[in-house]
Length: 249
Picture 1 (tube, rainbow, N blue to C red):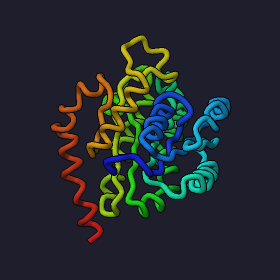
Picture 2 (picture 1 turned 90 degrees about the vertical axis):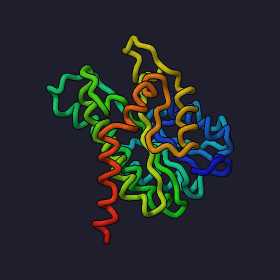
Picture 3 (picture 1 turned 45 degrees about the vertical axis):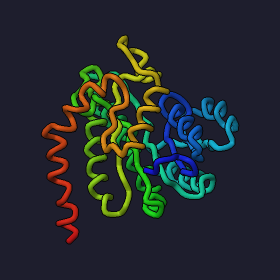
């Protein structure tokens, strides 16, 4: 990650509202050229054209055909890619009794970012770019009222760590953002203290500037940051990472 965002080409999924919108604006304010996608046509229409340095397109990251369309639209607007922000996600209340709800979460929260990453990886390898996956504290320990969401975020966290090891030798850095409760539509039903999308976006941006692999951008996530960084799971990640180089050799 460069020490300045000026001139960077950035893609943000689910960028028409919430953290995605705040993040797109933070990068644009810092001098980046940004393309956002979303499934909410009305939100995109309201956003589209407001700032010439931010392009917008309709795309569902769970649909590989729409991701292909996103690739063509975003790459034309941006002319390449330096930073990919995988922000799209869903959270539905459930009790693990319906397999289709679990599958829906995995389609968006796990395979969605993987679809987008695969599509844009050639551009990111060319630019020695950055992948940012917005995850959740529920990926570290399940939140029982949304267990399917928690499962999908745990899988996405593991996928992020795997990509980090697999791509390290190719010059692409991969960052996990561990989010606590943020004041967005997704968390509307939770009556708990929440950070604003704007403050979370600034926290993520600052973490990228510092080169942090795992970014804890809000008060709730910051409370466990040190324990994560010095704990057994992170130690195991570092211990296992060299297997990529050994297997390649």
